[in-house]
Structure formats: C-alpha cells, structure tokens
Length: 135
Image (tube, rainbow, N blue to C red; front, side, top):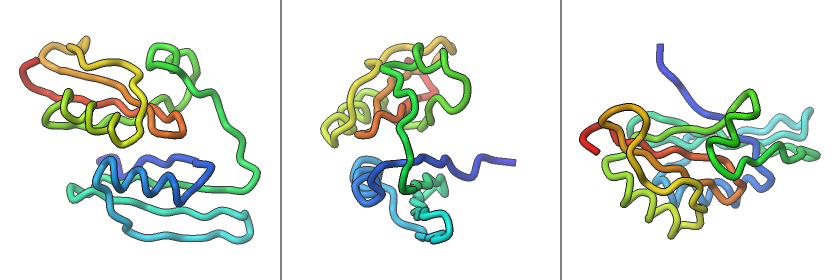
C-alpha cells in the first residue's frame, strides 16, 4: 500500500493549480467536473507519481488556517502534507520566492538525522519539507 494523493479544497482552482505547477514542478494529469455538486477538480502529478488533487466547489468555506504546525496539531484532521526534498534550505527559499509564506524556518527535526521546514501555499495550506539524511 502507498499514498496515492493529497486532496486540497481551494477557492480558485486555476490560481492554485498555477502555483503548484510553478512552485513544485507538478504537471496536469487530468481534470474533471461534477456538475451535480458544482464541483470541479484537477489532479497534478510529479514525475515520481506523487499527486495533488485540487478541488473547487461553489459555496465552500475556509476552515481553520493554522499559522504554524504546532497550532495545526490543535485541530483534528488534515494538518499538512510533507514533501521529501534533497535540500530543505534551497527548497524553502524557492517556495518563498514562488509566493509561499514561511511558517517554520529550516532546522533539525525531532527525528534524528532529519532536517525540516514548513511553508504555507498562497491559500494557507501547510507544506512540510523533509530531508532524510545528515542534518
């Protein structure tokens, strides 16, 4: 068994998709619409097969947007997605330049030998960056 995708409800599908394409190098795999629910979506994929599904539905309301991962842990349910990267510091800087906001600067993780950081996409969704190797 392996994780297939992470689904994120967004206010503006086109704007969110453009950011994920530019910031994370994702490409469109397919799009879909469910007119009965006034819902449309887009699945983006990385060359490694990792997917992010973006969903836009009329009338959706924002949920709690945690300012950092420690606050996110106070709300049960989805808290963040994590991406394994080769260089946490460089990826952190790259995502900030692409419009993400810093939520936790690069640092050693609680797990020995792991380096981590957190950013938020333009809609406030938390993204953890991890490098498993020497800190």
